[in-house]
Image (cartoon, rainbow, N blue to C red; front, side, top):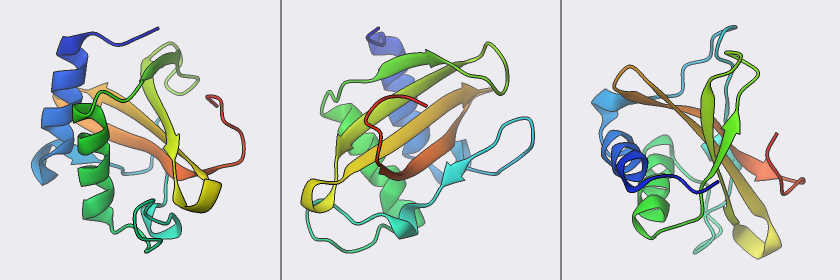
Length: 117
């Protein structure tokens, strides 16, 4: 299911500011946010934490397809998944969640499976 323009705008706005984005791990909201282990599709260099978020915002601004999923943790909450091209045929798996005026980076890693997980 495609996301609304309102959700897309929220994700772009929140991802663009250090004050409104996080990827902190917790048992209730686990993350697999590893941008330094992912190579940028344009250069092959590793992402930094900041430019990973910039990349996410740019993808969203560019109209990338975003799939809505139902999360297991926390059960029943909504997640937003982007699967995009990475370096040299790799795929980058990105999962986001909106929580109380912030965007939580739940996943940012190379994916061997090209569907949501």
